[in-house]
View 1: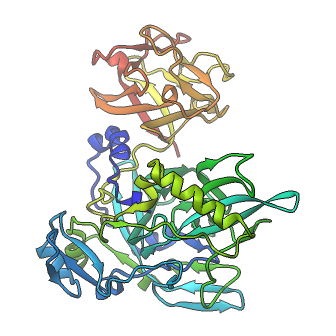
View 2 (view 1 turned 180 degrees about the horizontal axis):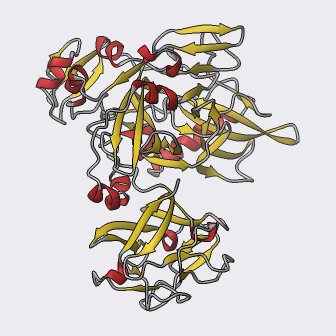
Length: 503
């Protein structure tokens, strides 16, 4: 969505550990491997803003300067390469944006593969990065439009509140939409380590995703195109809680990946043709749909463009779809006007700009950071970080490496850093009181800064620092059975840890 044009500085900071240790570089991964792990993407049945190729997008776009001068119409690879400034931007040649009365379908044509299912023939753009201990396969998806924002509302019908899914013109609408999925595999390419699903500038990491054979399954949210590992209703923001204002009981901003699930859809209109089972996008079925970016001189031209792929745009507040139950559109409109006046909607929903391209956003490096299942070992003693009793409130300890699940830790992005979770118990490493000399403990995962850690190269290993306190994880006396502690950074081997990615 509009937030996709934020450069992913949070993820890059969390990645400092391995980005410094392994300056990620392009790896000559075979097309067969790229095809093997390419995702199967499922688009919502009500999706109108379909995937597209950059070629089709450029054909209908013009390149503009910040002063409103047309630099190229239509936009071309060479024009983008010659005018890379971040102040330049792309905009539709015809100047037409979707509205409630002009809710047009865009993107590459969809072909029917069954009476109730369609299939996209759009390309997926692929970048490969070898980090030394694993390889990231980065699959970039492009859409002509980020469509109207999805919502879920509880609406009083009779004496009962019923849930409704609907899209709302023109919230979060913008021209151009880059999304991506990163598939992390072992260095020998034989093992899937996990998958990052891009979601509005963040990334959800899943170690055991659902697969279509060898292909990670990805569900693209209705109109926002955020990626999820499962089909359902993914709440972005809760705007209104029960009891609400009759007939609207509650209202939530949602990324909707389900086609049904016991609720009612109320779009402005159905796509044409309409496939009730949605549209599949499986670029691995035809390798011509996999556009490799490594050593691709043509793609390098448009990748070098640093400006947004759409103009800054103020979205009007329009009525919700009339298909919603009587009375609710009026009430929802009044809520939106009030929310806009108080500034609650401006940053995400009524002010939108096009996204930056993959290279400008920093996607062409391994920016997701450390993620996977690791053993964490002290450089000073060679002892492993062990979950101990692995019950909430117990302290982690130093123990001889034994290969048990007590010494296996799942690392994945969380907030401003990385969470460290015991594979054995599912409990998170928590800084506790987070004061110097105290001991970190095992605790139920809660996503707070106490459970977020950053990694930086230090000496022969990695320094693990609490986001909450900026204190460092220290092996303490570093003898078997003792408990690590939180301590000020001093650069010693007691505060250096070796991370070993487990097979």
